[in-house]
Length: 453
Image (cartoon, rainbow, N blue to C red; front, side):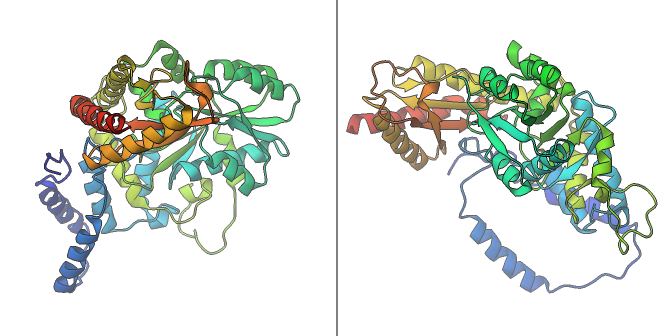
């Protein structure tokens, strides 16, 4: 790829890291350990060569899966912390990084309007959701976990792991939980927890949280928000009115998951679980006769199901939030606004083009579309071929299976229950500047496929 690689390989990164390492080293008086630099060089060059066998995830023409490069300050802070390699399971293993984790998590909680809370970092959304459902199962034993059938598959899998009954709820035509179907199930009295998805993986759809909160008051279930993907968008100033109302209501859920390693500009291995009631910490309580003799303070291991956890992840997150505070109208918020603006711009181009079918306006920064064809199966085949042709032109999209009920196919023959669609995740702020280039490649790839029939 001959295009520029925006901000990925900054020339000053190593110099900034060198200065920070000098500062870190001044706090310790230990002998230097010499290493075989020749051997390290050879191995690192081999690693670099192997890593070249990748898609250019950092580039704006990679618009397929949920892959976003960490901010430079996150990369550097993470690397800096590795010279200490702290473990945030106990204060003794990571004094500074544990304090930084608490501060960083408190900043995320404040973004949702929570001052009192219980929360910590974990390896990602799956583990964070596991902890939320584990708490839910202990508070409502024997009752069902429910989520929409467009929610992440992890909820059903985790429920199985925890021995909890799970039931999916149908979605409406915009990929949101269907409230009428949910209420029918609630009337049976068997539901303990409802999972509201704030940004589904497939389409970025947002469940109707306002109505779910009303149902919670009526039926008394626990409400968990899976905002792993969409959580940060509450800072964006260009949401639809309906989406803004959802984000304003997130302060009323019982627990919430967000993934800093998605829109939070962090390396992978950084999720966050938050509980509105700090009292759920009692359910984590355990006694260890051999680990924590020298820490009288509460440590993060006492409110986490995971044991050893990377302090470096907390350091990177703290540094990023220090540089880019989680505030509306700040630089971080503007990045989210650009991603959503890019999605709306691409959607408008697709909607105006008779070759494509769009199911609904993007609620966040994910765009999905199908092809006009004689049948749904034909449209699915065309999508796969366009996906391949675009990739050969260095535009990397994704494919997703969606229910045919999401689309108005008109005279198209509906010969299967799902349709293979093209999907674009425009989560890099640079995507807004690249929409015309993305569109030109998509247009050419589509024209080639349709001309060949």
